[in-house]
Image (cartoon, rainbow, N blue to C red; front, side):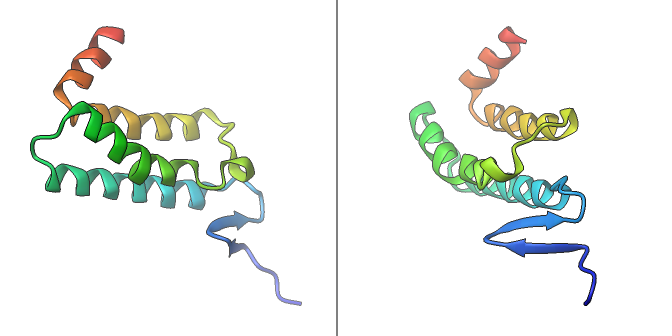
Length: 102
């Protein structure tokens, strides 16, 4: 039998320690790519339109198979929060609310 360090099944990268680092990095990178696509293609975008695009294009990647790899480590949660923080900067009124709330 051959020892396998990681395997991908149904889009989820499983490693031998079940920490899902590679999976989380892949999904975060996809989410950033989607944010970049939104930023490039929608120069002037309403808050409503942005939220709709965010929920359908970005959040989908962050939540894919969440029941399997649910982020428990602080570093993983922080990485996911950074995506949301960058997303709020794309809409001026969301960025102002984010800065006021801390």
